[in-house]
Image (tube, rainbow, N blue to C red; front, top):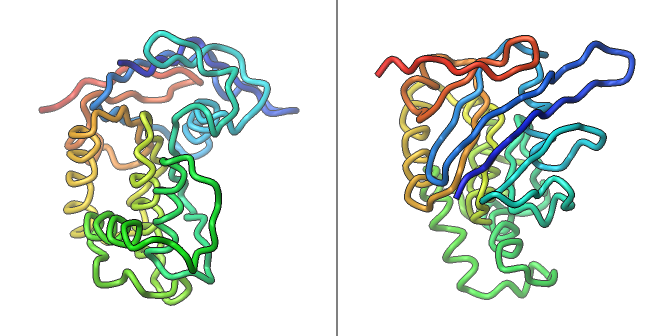
Length: 227
């Protein structure tokens, strides 16, 4: 199965065209990386794929079927932005449990009645991102990097078929970033999830990416892998 982006264009009102016909293809289990300067349209492309921006042109397909007419919650796309949107009044594992609920398409229940199974699974996802010991920590007591990792665990717990990662490791120190990046990439590969990462770190893209593009003048230009 394949994520295909074909001829995607987007223009913000009053500005020159941001995306000028982006084409890219990512197979399930692959991690594609998108490089480019700040303000070059990388996050805009992710938001188009996720269905969070209206008015873009072009096609987004999964397994040959167009998903660009579907609302965001039906696209099977998970997105992790630079700023983690967590519930500050809840502890870490309860935030991750929302990803599990989304995956199972359950109706909302009171957080106080979450079954033990969801807590145990939430703890496993937190262990993946190195935060098993913070499962019961209130989010507002976590550092910025820890909050970002909780948001990453929640995104992965939903098990989407496509994951869009907008600088997901940017708040982490280098040693943790170097450790966590391959673990996330390998997990996505094992689950056969198509992933598109945005980063400013070319070395990271070269180390982790199955495919790498540069966003140049609103188009995705393949970059040669140096492996």
